[in-house]
Length: 311
Image 1 (spheres, rainbow, N blue to C red):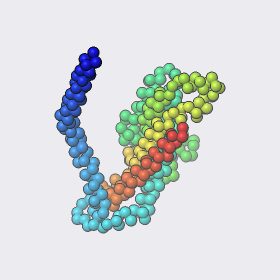
Image 2 (image 1 turned 45 degrees about the vertical axis):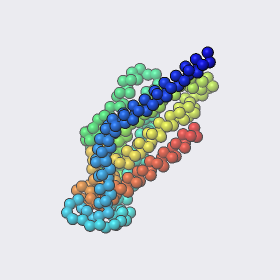
Image 3 (image 1 turned 90 degrees about the horizontal axis):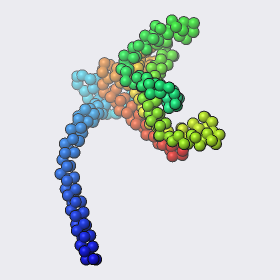
Image 4 (image 1 turned 135 degrees about the horizontal axis):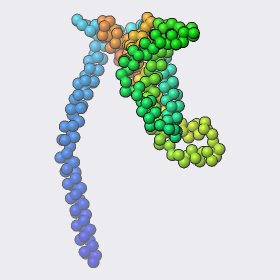
């Protein structure tokens, strides 16, 4: 009996080894197919992203105006950026706008998501309604908002001195109109992220908290917000990065005006680089801006993920 058992085990073991060898052989034969699928994407990414970036970095060390001859100027473009008042103003505006818009977007989105996550009539319908702004063309909606701020709002709120005139022509308040448009559209995506996070929280936690006498605010502070910490991190990082690169809402509403009061870094790069004869100079600005956004995003991840760990 023992001899038969050993023979059976030997036979089984040998079959298993053969199957493992055959599977490894099949995986090796399948490898070229994966390469044929991956390489076209890698080549396209290199041609339309990596190569233009490298060319842009090369020209940032020249005095190329976008046409004609050029010469190497070393780091002078980068040095001049730190003394350019218009560039510094654009960075200041971009960060002010991004911080305010990020805070408002996440506050409103989380509040709306909490409401949509509750058991209300027509919940799915309202989820679709709140997502509509995200799929609309921002330039088209921007011109609609421009008409609203320039024509409708002064007539509707003519009794209020601030809104009696076109707010878009006010250097001190024009940026608030851009914030309204940007937040209105950005909330759509953020709401979906928060709803995904809220649906991962077990209902038993709220039932236990209610039995212990915890109110709505205590449940939010001790259960809801800690458990959606990862989703909060995603929304904050994506929102700030997106708002720092704001372009379309400004083009639609003010085009950087009045004067340069609402000129963002991206709009300045576009204007100077493509129509202002500052191609190399604004390319250097774009390189610096890329580094700034990368550092800010990494810093956000580090701080917010540590906060998640504490929860």
